[in-house]
Image (spheres, rainbow, N blue to C red):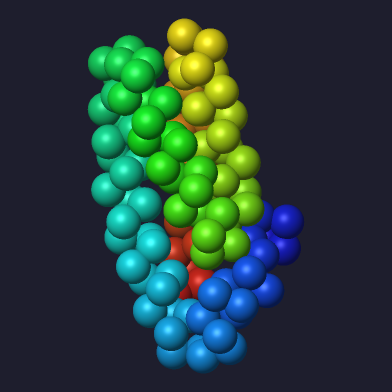
Length: 108
């Protein structure tokens, strides 16, 4: 999991406050879960523009809290959408969902 999540990034963001780290992660998991649902709908509808926009948001939000794996996976989807095709995006979406579950485990 170390390569998928940068705990130092989260600690820095929270100023070393463990309770705040947990709160940030909880907010992130809920927010990114909604975004992943939007991304799934965009991919399902072959809506390249919306998929690019939502993937870009997930990429940035994930990087902010240290969810490196999620950020990289969202970047792959964004890159595909920028090229005008969502071919292979469902596989990346499943990977994103799996990584989100890993991050969610950190909130317990």
